[in-house]
Length: 299
Ligand code: C5P
Image (cartoon, rainbow, N blue to C red; front, side):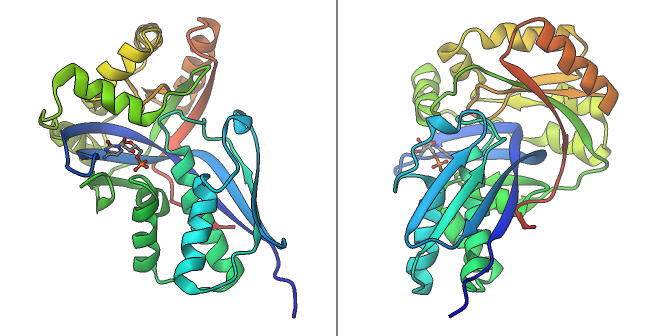
């Protein structure tokens, strides 16, 4: 039997241009009204021949991620193998550029890329709709990271509706020294405002995207989780203030944080803002990114 050739899939990070968090549901998740955008910071997952199923990670923060059976990429491969009956043998090599526990969907991105890479590596030929179903089982952000672009996410984030967007947007991402665990941020939010608060609706962000108006979008960016992320990491206040003082059109904590996302008028404005934020020592490092970009793809 011939040995299959390695397959690499590339997957973007996400930011939430709007994150409206509704009540906590009986299953423990919160109802969301969120606007996702895929941005040009990428992880790559390569499936290659190996006797068992294993994962090896490299890149900033990779040492903080468990590489055992709890790893979301391993769970994605196992779920695909269980459904299709293939022998789950592959070495999953993950090159991480998406910040770990950064509120940019890094773990979910690896699950999305693993589904695609293993589907091609094992020749299981899943339909798009089955792949999206598996994605939703793995995590609330995984379907969006397969899809990419810009989308409205409802349910727990897994029900996607495409959003009309004119043009593309330039982002500066301010990365923090340490990550924040998502469940803890949701728990803190429930403590701060009660578990049955209503989600802020996304209308202002949707209107700005349809108009392709960066100034309007900057003013409309909103995250219901921000008070909880700020409570757990008060230093993020200085990061947000610095970005706005340095001329960002708007700035928010991305998802559950601690990464902050700032909107700039142009690519050159984004590069300048990134350099100025680094000089202010209000974050560990910065990245410049564009969005929207396509979702996970086999290279
Ligand atoms: O779906 P995912 O595995 O990414 O979620 C991680 C955690 O974030 C959940 O266990 C839950 O605590 C919280 N969460 C939530 N409501 C959502 C999405 C995530 O409470 N809609």
